Image (cartoon, rainbow over all chains, first blue to last red; front, top):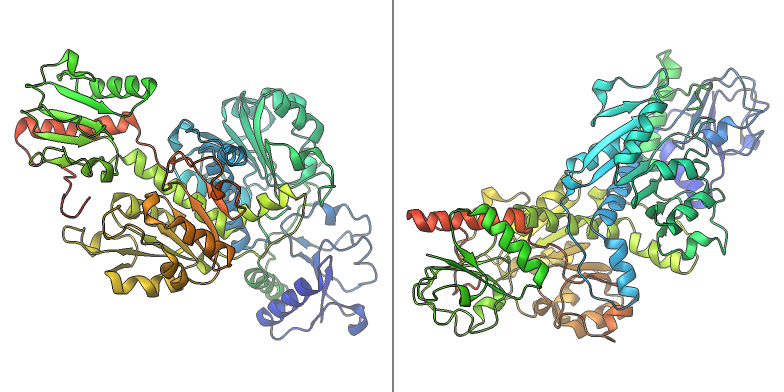
Length: 316
Length: 316
């Protein structure tokens, strides 16, 4: 039974993925075009944000394995076959990369490195106050694979880290949390009010869309910073700009945006208190990700349970 | 016997130091002016880069305790009383701050965050290749308190870290090293040739002055980066600019300079591949540093061995 790789990949990425997947699954046939496959035989689709409708006409499909960690676009496709299991990507190299980006952003904010970069632009030499890491309170929102990896890495550096999650059924137990974990809507406001830096790693669902709006920014500690490494639609961008311009927030590190690539002329590009990253906080690493795919494909072939299945009702 | 605090401190710093020192040594008299002390009675000088000659006329002096980790300027004062022990500052909060700055610089280089900052200036959205931490080789030069703290922190993040020291007598044993440690002049060139990022935390001595010159840059891996967190005089600045402009080096993170503050119009300010920091990689934290001072003052009072004594021949 062949595997079908489809999605938005540039030619180099496509070749890298094919090579990595074929190396990790040497006994499987993997193609990136239905012209080279019998669509009626395909039982696994390996997908990277496929255009809507890509998975129609695959009657034998038994697994949709995402190559990306975020599945919000995939689940929004109304033609996604309704009864086929969907698995998210959990790639240890990607989790490490996300923890690195979260740590870099928190170090930059804590130690004033964004402010020093502005000073360099102005040829200004001025020493800013130095705080210890244990004087900096960091909230990590979202405690899935990526949120837990980031929270653990930050706690290891001595930051005062607390986590928050919505508390949907199926979440990992509290005992698996690397930091104190709060749960549910009522726990969010007090955590935001106490935190110097808020790192967003929530999944994008109807409940988290536009979570960061004027009201939520108003509930944050004055002068706090936002690090958005999750999805652009978590943030109402106009409200963020207003919070920065009023001084309610001091800085935002943004890896994701309502529209990507960030349009030319968007105010974030030139805002001195916004750091723009081109959605690179954590790239899936084809080498280790292919091994994760192989584990799930072998489980399917041998009748074992599939890992990292998406709950479509929950949205992740 | 009173303690005399002297050196280049602005009024706020001076008050913070006096308050912290008095809190850590409640039974001692500590003043920052000889007008309020009997100079003939002063037995401890607490110094922060004192102007040359500051310690003349203190016949009872038994300890010069530096509040800063670097003592090269202090030792260069020809009027420094020749037979009085000099102690360096070893402040755990300062070592933590240095490890944070080294980690931030290495993360920024490894993950392309300086390049992404340039992209933001140009409103350019482009994804750069992502390497794993264990694919990045980092050399830490200098394995004193600060070098070891930085090397340990970097190794903890998964970087391939190796250390180098000159190998003077009195260095800590290899068993205390958090990373593989090379020693002596002949070991330096192979390490430089193999390293993607070189972090300098050497003491400034006649042997290390101008260590980073055209020849040494030529011995580095093509496209490597330099992070100088030690002293400006370790680097021949014109040779660094040439190495950057030739592409031999890709980037330099510079916290220290030949002249500080970095003069207006200096080419580093506007160089796209130079990150300028105003000598803030690690500030001594008066709160924890005062406790270190107290340990040495009590040792002096009770006849116990003094800690962190400087070897004037070695220069640190």
